[in-house]
Image (cartoon, rainbow, N blue to C red; front, side, top):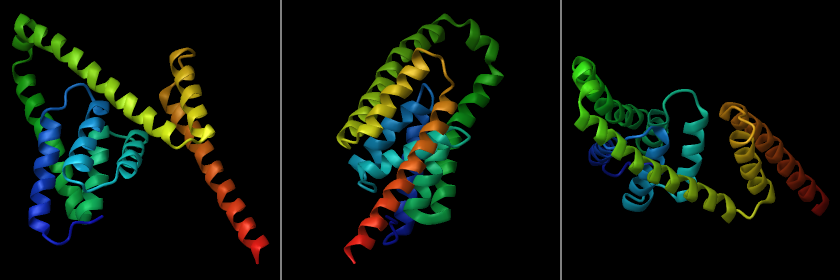
Length: 197
């Protein structure tokens, strides 16, 4: 869904959206998933919810930070290669500036009790946002009413939580199962079309 009608305005909106999301996202990549959904699906209406979930899945399973990966895809879908570059720029500026400042004053930050308390309080907020992401993703998987997807979600959760299996291993196994499922459904569809002729 490329926004070509007013490219400069769209690029500016994209830059400001990714800059703002990146500047106020504490707690890692999973937090930004919920915020991106609210911004790009509900507020700007650039994507459908299903498409945003697909973008999230690709960003999470690709190497690199989730916000940067998601920004590349979002930017490219909205305004092509230039959009991807602008979105990445907006995403990397806030952490680069903040981490640069913290690195200069690292000792003062580490020993400051007020900052320590602030970080503890922020963790509670981050936990709530991550919980919101989990509920949203699980709800959308349940809405598909596909036994395979719901079963994979439950088995993956058990594998990671109870058996301490690496998340990357789970992602690759789910990817392989998804590819097999897609090929099987494609073959079934071709067979059905062949029978109807």
